[in-house]
Image 1 (spheres, helix red, strand yellow):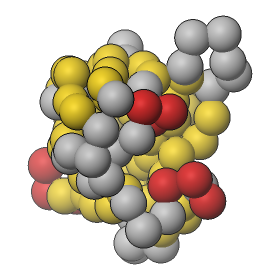
Image 2 (tube, one colour):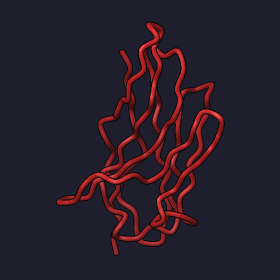
Image 3 (cartoon, one colour):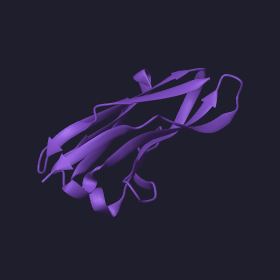
Image 4 (cartoon, helix red, strand yellow):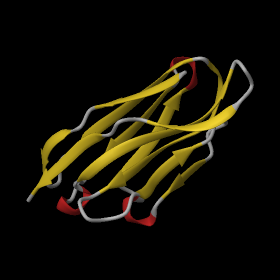
Length: 120
């Protein structure tokens, strides 16, 4: 019904930048929150940043001042601009969205993940 597809991952040197994108498609009536989580090998998935439909933003402390989340509601797309990357930012990054479908059901959807690897 609803698909989230991330892109933009890859290998980057420490101190570098990367921009992730996530496009939602399918039977979408509206999207409330959109956000990014990440999961490093052997660790639990953790919240990175979220943005509501009216632009209220939350950042995890470990990315404040380095990452910027934004969204284009017309394109059902959320972005994560990552600057000053550190090796500890290496993880699979997952897009998440709270979507209300045309059948008026609301569910949380996840993308398949995109790998970001930061080399020292």
